[in-house]
Length: 137
Image (cartoon, rainbow, N blue to C red; front, side, top):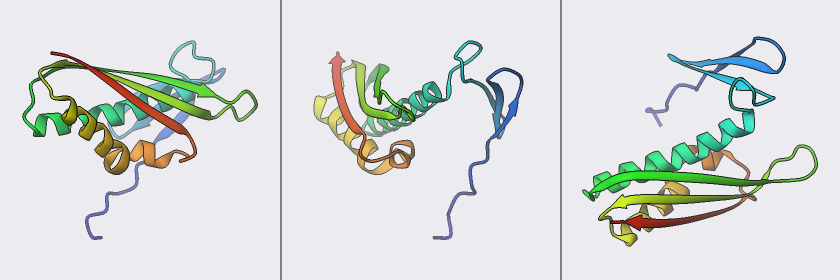
């Protein structure tokens, strides 16, 4: 228990209309409720989940010493019709290039989902999450 990470702190400063300048550590981003000058909060959530699982998959595949050349993840999120219009279904499609065995990709995605992806584990677990992948050697 002694190696707990300090809390993640993020600040958002309103900069007009529905736009905010976000900062966490040395990193900055724009959050725009109208999606005009930057990604919306739900787009940031999509980036967060897809990025978290993609980083896990790349890390696990590299640790297995498989020759991954490229990876693309496509997030498709279906939202409820009524407020709060939360995500009810999310599909992540992983497209890989390189001679990576399909079992290694399946295992990496499963480990990310079940054990490592802090973003997924921070979301409501009644969201239907499906993952698919294809490999182009």
